[in-house]
Amino acid sequence: MLETWVMGFVSGYNAFVAPDGDVTSGLPPDDIFNRVDRHCETHPHSDISGATEAMVREIRVRKH
Image 1 (cartoon, rainbow, N blue to C red):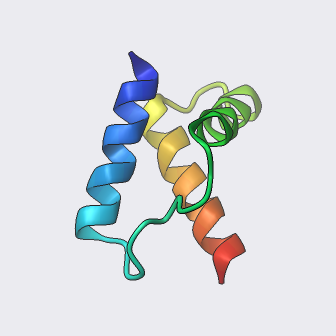
Image 2: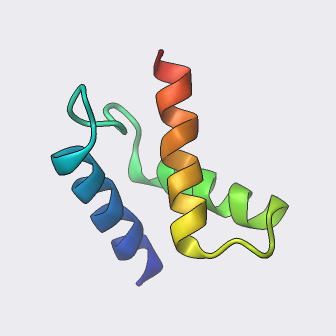
Image 3: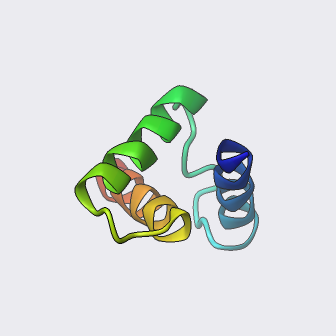
């Protein structure tokens, strides 16, 4: 269920915020979920929203 939420967040981000289209372009879903999981492991007080936002920021920084 949380994976569906993460992908919905990414879709919304892509539709309304992403300046260059698909922020996760080329990343398989498992890579996206693993990034969110790693954030949760290192930031145990973060919720799924915070972890997904952090994942998007990380990907954007690496692309630029």
